[in-house]
Length: 395
Ligand SMILES: Cc1ncc(COP(=O)(O)O)c(C=O)c1O
Image (tube, rainbow, N blue to C red; front, side, top):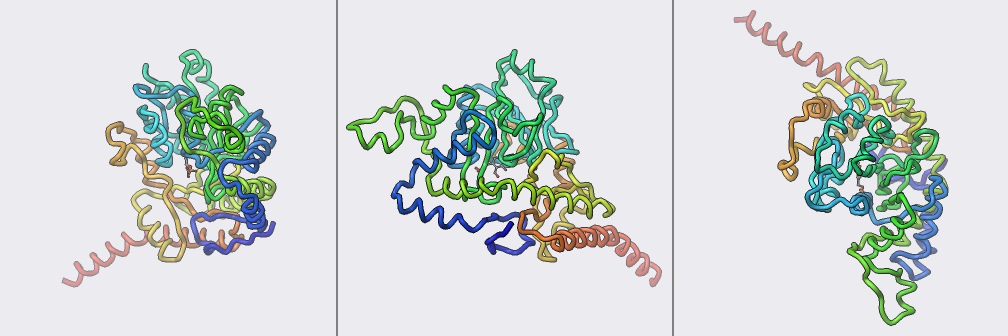
């Protein structure tokens, strides 16, 4: 696999990975003069559907737009609640609020950072209209044990699979299980369109509804509209379409996706190997055999996490934190509830640099600096007490 990216150094937390032919693809589409939703978008949708093994995919402008439209398709609206882990990107929560519904924040399993069927079940109320599992790091979430209960109560599953394009569940792809599944193709995702997203609908009728909703509720795309004297607005809609320019990037990325998936798996395994020997580090497991890893997240002692983060940045390594819990965000305070497991684990998290541009040496370097930062932090209180003892003895 050859990359043409030189957008930032290997120590960046994440960065786009380009294959080199994206520019020619954009240039080809520029010359067609069709930049909104167009034939290139339709081709991208068909190729995504073929890759995932599903009947249809609806491409949209962003993963956030995908979640918003999918929730609306599931019938979510004001007075409803949507069960969602607090430990997710704020986009999941904003998409819920955009429908007028309320988020019902629930805990995650500290080992996987994903919801469990038990936590989802504990979050159900009479007002629950949908549950939104977040496939953290790309790991599939199996809600098997509560499926029947959700179906009986007519509660939809809207998967936030922003991290999980290409991952597997039950031998098929995430997105092929019959739920409404939403992907993000933003700049740092394993498959990028620059910005983009997609929804896997549950039925052909739902696909039609979503296609209308992403184009302001109009019944026909532009190339058909320009041949008629009028157009029909048949439903509420948004300007959420995926442009042909973004679709052109996505098509190149999809053609190379299996190489990227293999590279991400290999790099994640390398991290896991070198990190297991470092005291104080726990790698968050993402079931790499079935997952196309989005990131590499570790847990470190919470009392030292911020200092370790600062030490890594001082060494030029952009560690991150994914995510500050949403129930503690000011904008979501109205829906906050005690979530001790989430608060405890969130204070331990560090995301290490992760993207296909990394070399084995980069990974070894990051791991070595992480080990040194933890050791330095462990020694720091001893140094302080040794100094204090020395001062006391000198008096
Ligand atoms: C978990 C999660 N959900 C939703 C989104 C939103 O996707 P987008 O940035 O394409 O709107 C992201 C983006 O990073 C995400 O990480």
